[in-house]
Length: 81
Image 1 (cartoon, rainbow, N blue to C red):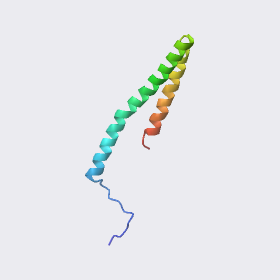
Image 2 (tube, rainbow, N blue to C red):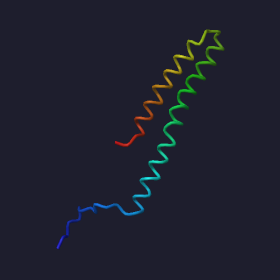
Image 3 (spheres, rainbow, N blue to C red):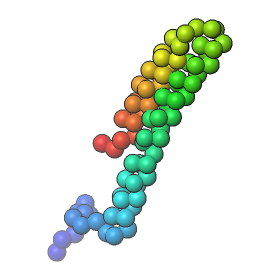
């Protein structure tokens, strides 16, 4: 008799397997959009500040770089593991 309550099945059920695949697909579709959106928002904000202050794309590069690092940080935060 095996009455071990901590024992788990080695093979996942079909519902768990399907859930994993759909979750991975959703994550694969979401991550590039998040990354690009962070860079575009940062660069766009910098562009409007440059336009407002009449500077030559200084803030666009600075805020675009900040958006790049924010997007990268968000990617790493959302990845499992």
